[in-house]
Length: 187
Image 1 (cartoon, rainbow, N blue to C red):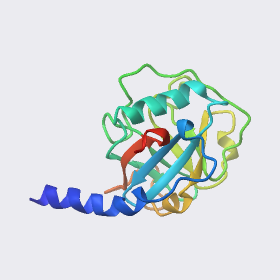
Image 2 (spheres, helix red, strand yellow):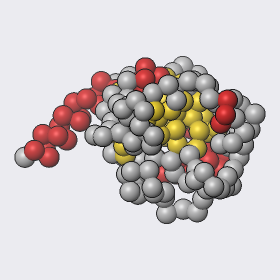
Image 3 (cartoon, rainbow, N blue to C red):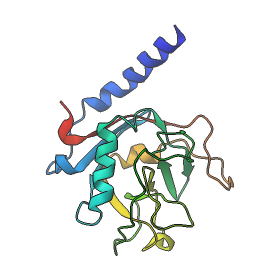
């Protein structure tokens, strides 16, 4: 009974987000819509910069891999990380092989979406990604820029953050991506 109520509550929270229009001029074939516990985030994928990474995010979204996945690492003023649909804690990836880095000259600034990777290997991005709260020039040329928030940065700003001073940025009882879809697939 509690699970049913939890599902109904989650659906109740998502319904207003589902009714929202997408940004005008959005290339729906190259955008993902992330309905979260806090509202909707729309990400314009940069297929011109990172075609393999964009294809992977769309593939995983279509498979439902990202549904109910937490924002497991959220550091105020820096970034919110998600995408571990395997272990749900930041230690997992997908069933697909890691991707070769697709670095660009696009700077990591507020709203940029980057692919997470293991610190010891530039070619280890798989399924996890992060959204920037602010500028982080130290990431420039070190991580693949996959896209940019086209709508919903206020939702990103409201995600539950780790306690200040937390070295890992791990969040207790984190917000989640309830449903992630390629915009062109939404009916």
